[in-house]
Length: 422
Image 1 (cartoon, one colour):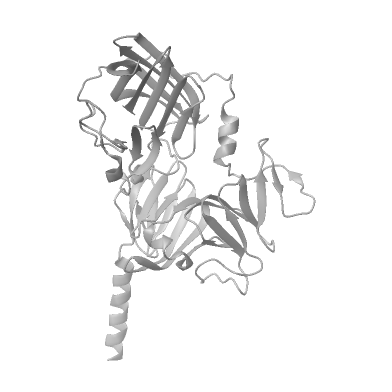
Image 2: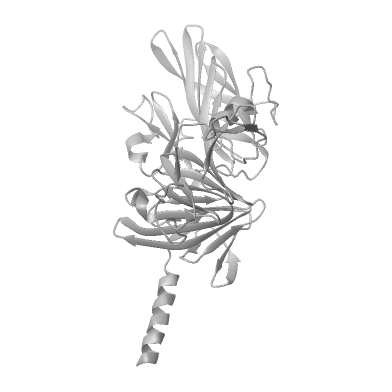
């Protein structure tokens, strides 16, 4: 009888370990997953279970989507273990991750948003709990850093009131919280009594605001806030050299946007624009896709499996037009226009882009547009020009893009939307 109970317990344990708690929605390079000391390649659609250890090497990257909708991006040279994941109905009762080294970005799903006290991310020296939804963690040698993109995160060193096997944010006197919306990161060094808040400066330095007389030190943080990156990337008079200086000819047909089946989809906000037989109501896309850029008429939505921190397949790429819609408006009269050529060059090493378009109008002739600007770490790009407005979004691999464009021409204006691919 006792033997039978032991066997039953082992079978039950194996069954629990075999339960899938999430899948890999995107895989770049050759990440692996280790389970029960057996290593195998992690492939797109591959399942992960409690006990799974995801390992990424140089150039490898993986996105995991858990059963409650939580997204975790495992960046290159990282090791992340799924310690526990349990769900009761729509709520998460236990969700624990361990980042041994490297970097991950965590975006809470609907289940975790209702159960924040059930989440914990541990590094070798720190316990991290959430009061928010979107943050990036870096586990470095002797240091843990956290950057908060949305909400609030609490970090504390392990101690008698903050145990490794606990859940939720620690509430000890050594716990420090950081909310989004600041040019700051939270850092805990090995042996320190509590985390420090570090101000990121535009000159690449960081300072500790916790001391009475902040000391300026050489920056060792691997984190840059989006604002710092965007402020330093391109100055007003800096030129960005495109991979392809000449726009590529494009045939703008009436039906090139009829089928939108890629990772980027255009939707209309209110009434259907005249002649538009292809865009979807934006309200039907919210919840299934992530909104990116928009104007008064259209919004660009991105498949969540292609969103998150950029992990481009190439350092730079020139994309070609696959679909476009344009119109010219003057004296209160709008008429259809045609995009005749275009090129979109993305340089991920400098986080910059350049785009050139030519639009053929019936009343103003050929109109040229040119945009130069920055690409944010989340794949949103915006031009710096006040006359030629361009804004768009990129898939995480950098091989697909959607972009809206506008330009004033005398008393009139040209505007449109586009899709691009490699």
